[in-house]
Length: 109
Image (cartoon, rainbow, N blue to C red):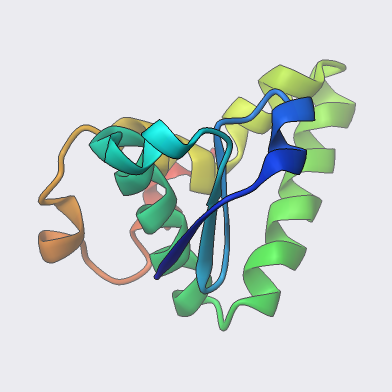
């Protein structure tokens, strides 16, 4: 895992993004934000489980599935199984030590 502070993220509405093997964050002080970093580390684990490329493909497919059903981009994002797992477990800083393989499947609906 490599954490990088990236100025282009300042124009977006996101605080961080995981693009294997990097975590890009918007603000330098977010390097100390354990919850944000844990959220992104969960995504890195998901990406590894799906051999990285399949994570991105599935993420995009799931996003558009929800977008066309809900007609709301933010709600579509929040319904993605990968995001649901990461948001549900981001405050559990020990989660990755006990997380079982393919745990995001529990969040598919």
